[in-house]
Length: 548
Image 1 (cartoon, helix red, strand yellow):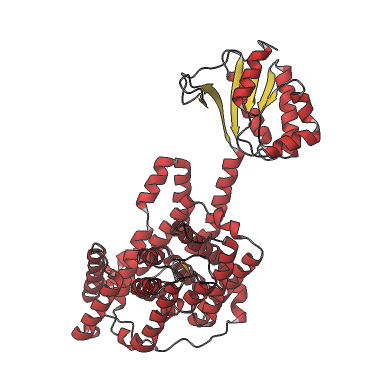
Image 2 (image 1 turned 180 degrees about the vertical axis):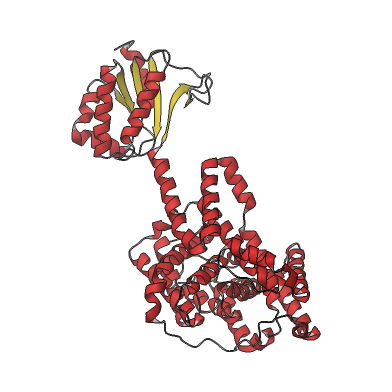
């Protein structure tokens, strides 16, 4: 339990201003996110209360603002849809939060913080884009004033299009006006657009009596702080698998935001402690009627930009949520549901990261294809199904990269003397009779023999035929016994072809492995192992080698 030390009143003032500013963004968004989850608006406000305080007391990130997010709201909706008929949504959502918290706590105790790296950025971009499309499709009925059917994006879209003739014009005007106002306010600096837009539309609704025109409103919002609610043990079997996926995404979202907005003078992030803090936030929040929460990118950005100096800023945001619940909840009754739908649509549009996908495409098309595949899975099969698929795709991408390391011939730059990829710099100098090949990856049981085959192919394709091969293994951090066995086989193949083998190797683990197995003596005894390519080339020249 820690606060960053603040020696003067100015820092306390800065935290207060940052907390209030963040609340102006968090609270209207939390109300809107609750509609995504299929819960009453107060459930979103509950997420900005207890989870925010719990994380502030236990977390290691200074600016991270923890409440509900669009991703977790969409996943909550998918989880609630899987519960048995007649289940009270608030109880199910609270149970889901407690289970998510329990999963995070267990992961923290087991020190599984490294799991955050198992979802790659491209896959996360595709997942969020798919979630954005799903959220937008789910709000179509709300913004045009008709009831849509179906769980998938295509079903919702076709349902909305089929009922355009029944669209409610006043509802569409409210939603359209809200979206337009939000777009305009986003261009005005230092103005909390969501708060201003929601407050303005609520005021207009009350003064113009929009319900009399058939515009649906959120209705009565219960005031007061949330009373404790015990989770339902009967829902554990249904919700536990979904809670695991939500725990992973909550952690990935939170740790990503915490890393992006960490300043140099901030204390270091502890991934395992972050798991514990998020687990505590979700478990405590669930007991007080919140649904799963995480650190949101937008609200963390606002908190940081507003000058937050410690976790006290998040406690100020939570106090603002408490004040709204205690004193202003009845004033939310005239708020049109279409206004919240419009706010959700703008949030969904930001999740659909077209620029990000285009940037990935320009950088590496294979990863862009995986991002698009993840997005299509989310759109075509559902958000909940896309979470394990996203994890699986990330792991398969990792395995593909490790099993197919960079292997390329080297040439020497005449100007700098540095050794470079000969494929990209074909004019670089080569050593007569010597082929230099660089390998960049750990060598282990799954890739060792494939690497040997690829190097053998390079030797066979070289023109003129090399008399010696220098393997640059300075980019190989380690190897296992299978890789060592493959290396022995490869050495034998080279000897059969009359090609002398030289090695540049400086990593401690491979050297120790070679020493313990006796393979080191065979090469080093003939002066063929050196710590760098330059040294190996110099030794090759000095040896006068010109053939086998």
